[in-house]
Image (cartoon, rainbow, N blue to C red):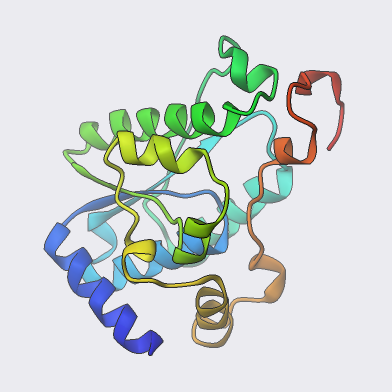
Length: 193
């Protein structure tokens, strides 16, 4: 069943011709990047990693590891979140605003490379969870190919582990550190998460 989903996904990506993909360093966006490269070639896939001051160094290391391992055409950038009340104070809208700012930046980068198809690695399993960032993706017309083809968490994990032979230590999700804090808690008061 996953084989058919992957073939359908590849055909969909081929129709897009060129894509940029928000790369969080997690397994879902990595899976989408690898399948896209196999569908349209490395030169037509632009992974973009947006560094945030509240993410773990482990995520940065994982991004660098996959960049080297797969010779990705990776772009690294960052965003200034210091003027966003919702992010700074970890309000219930924090996830929405963070995702929106990330993908607005990815859109600017993508346009510099003449790429109009911007993808996110949200999978079908994510669609049933409370994810305010999904609203931002919809508003910005960001494509969610994994969700579209109903590819779920365990299928992605199994593929990366068994087909790509990626060590389990690299197959974690990239859960935001701010979800570990109660809402309406200014996160800069915490030294470590």
